[in-house]
Length: 294
Ligand code: C2E
Ligand code: MG
Ligand code: MG
Ligand code: MG
Image 1 (cartoon, protein in one colour):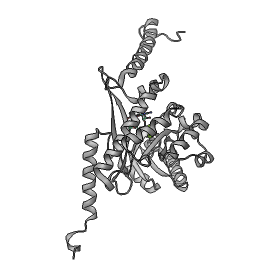
Image 2: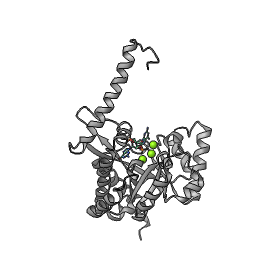
Image 3: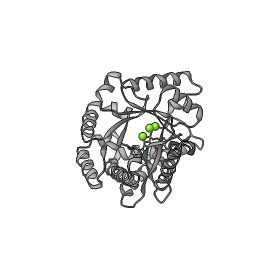
C-alpha cells in the first residue's frame, strides 16, 4: 500500500522501499560469508577508572568490512540476529575475546587491564550449543572467564527474562561476569535485578548525553548509580564526551567511564600502545619523588 506521494512521484517511493529490501538481502547474504572471507575484525575501546582515569578494561566491538566498504554494527547486528548469522559470528567474537584475554595476561601480567567486555545478543542466549562452544573456547585459549564480562542489553534481557536468566546463571557458573548494557532504556524492576547474576550496570549513552542540561537525565543517572552501588554493582557510564559529564559522574559516585572524551574504539595495536603508556604513567605517579628516598 502506497500511503504518500514521494518527491519523484509514486515510483520513487516504491523504488526506495525495494532498494531497502535489496540492501538488507545483500547484507544478510554478505554476512553469511563474512567469516570465511576474513572480513570481520574487532576493536577495543578502553574503559577508565573515574578517579584515576587509568585503564581498567576494554569493550570489544565488532567491525565488518565487506569489499564495498565498512558497515556499522548498529545496522548489521540486527540483521545477523534476524537471519541467525549471529550464532557463528558470535562464536567468532567469543574466540577473539578468549584469545585477547589470554594474550593480555601474558603480555602485562598483574598489570593487565582487569577485564574485557563482549556484547552478547539474546539470540545467542537462546542457542543450546552456546555453553559447550564457550567452554571449548575457554579451554583452547586457556583464558580466564572471570576476566570476561558479557554485556547484554536491558531490553533484550527483559524480553525473555526466564530463558535469559537460566542461560546467564549457567555462564556465571562457568566463571563469566555479566553486565546489563544500555541500562535505563528497558524496564527492569529492583526485584528482578537482585535475582540476576549481574556484576556491572552500564548506563546508556542517552542519559549521559543529557547530564549537563537535562534535569531529568541528571536525576535518573544519580538515582541509578545510587541504586546500583547499593546492590554492590560496578557502575559504568558510556558515551562520555566532555569534562562536564565526567565531573557530574564523579560526584554521583560512578566507578568507570567509557567514551570519546578518553578513548575512541582502537585497533588492537593501538590499544596495546595505549595500555603500555598508561602503565608507564601510573608507575610515574606511584614512584615517590627522589627527595623522599632515604
Ligand atoms: P554498545 O554495546 O552500547 O557499544 C557502545 C557503542 O557506543 C559503540 O558503537 C561505541 O563505539 C559507541 N561509543 C562509545 N563511546 C562513545 C561516545 O563517547 N560517543 C558516541 N557517540 N558513541 C560512543 P559501535 O561500535 O558502533 O557499536 C554499536 C552497537 O553494536 C553496540 O552498542 C552493540 O550493541 C552492537 N555490537 C557491537 N559489537 C557487537 C558484537 O560483537 N556482538 C553483538 N551482539 N553486538 C555488537
Ligand atoms: Mg556494549
Ligand atoms: Mg552499551
Ligand atoms: Mg549503547
